[in-house]
Length: 192
Image (cartoon, rainbow, N blue to C red; front, side):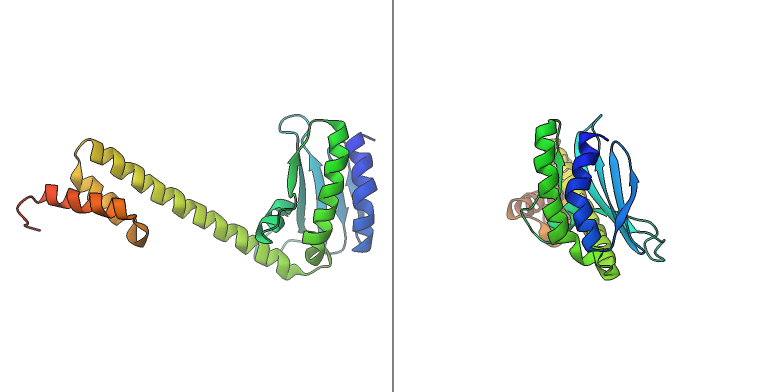
């Protein structure tokens, strides 16, 4: 067994047992603990990113979400906690301390799901989806801002107005002012 496997078993097997889970898969880079309904896997990418991630999922396919998984960092973020949700580790000595901290995070943040509370699964995936939508909306607004700045720099006032109008109620005061100036330059004699 690798140092990763040994220490995952050392720290996570007692947690798994408390929730009625048992080790169902083990390899040099992944140890999976499963029960009748739920599982969690501790995965170590020691070749590329050196990340250690704890994934949670359902044993059977969920009609709403299929076989989607989420990871410990999602639970930690939702809880607005300062606990660790994942780690990047290249040093074997640090690996042991990180696994111990991740085990505590799994106990604190994953316990409801590991008890079989499937609603936690649904709520977590809904939160992940909502966050993805918010990030996409933010990116879209930033694209509009960039388009407006670029158009302003070349005197394309129609594009400036269109880009800032697309921001809606999140337009900043400076952008509102620039949009008003662009409108005046588009229609210098007040004819709208």
